[in-house]
Length: 204
Image 1 (spheres, rainbow, N blue to C red):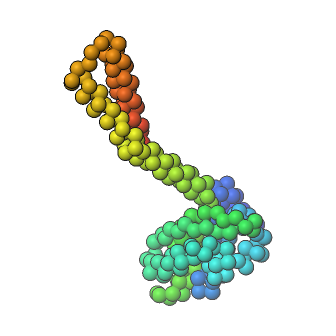
Image 2 (spheres, one colour):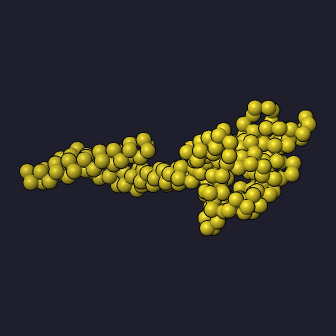
Image 3 (cartoon, rainbow, N blue to C red):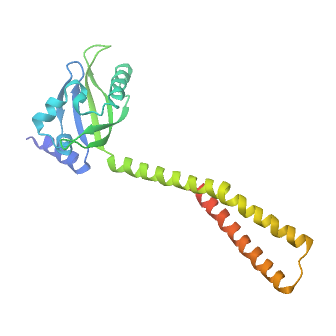
């Protein structure tokens, strides 16, 4: 292997990024830096065979339409335009991973027909998982906020109103006044906690 090629392979491995060139006209993989088939668990020969028809056999069925749309965008793109895409690819163990790629035209047969594209791809499964986990937490906070605002805040407001009404009409006996004072203090603190929870949920 030539020094320059060896350096590029080492660079791709260190950065955990796949680099490849693909012949769109003949639906054929021309070059792969090696990371993709290592990441997916296929042999180099298997990976080359799976590259036919834009990797249809290992692309999640719900994502293949996105691949076709990306190819159409590439066909209409100008020199230097970069087209992004995020899809799921099937590993040899049957598990899908999320892959983010950037591709652009490398060579055209003529003005209207693309011959080759170059693509850089990387595994972003962990990032997607974190995004989904964050989304779930936000939804939980929204649920808490809703319950605080509608299910808990309403009866607390009613109790506060009743306490104010009792105070307005007066109450006899030091013991009763002391109980009312404790009740008012407790409900005021509870109301403050509810507001704090709502504020945290809104910030989330």
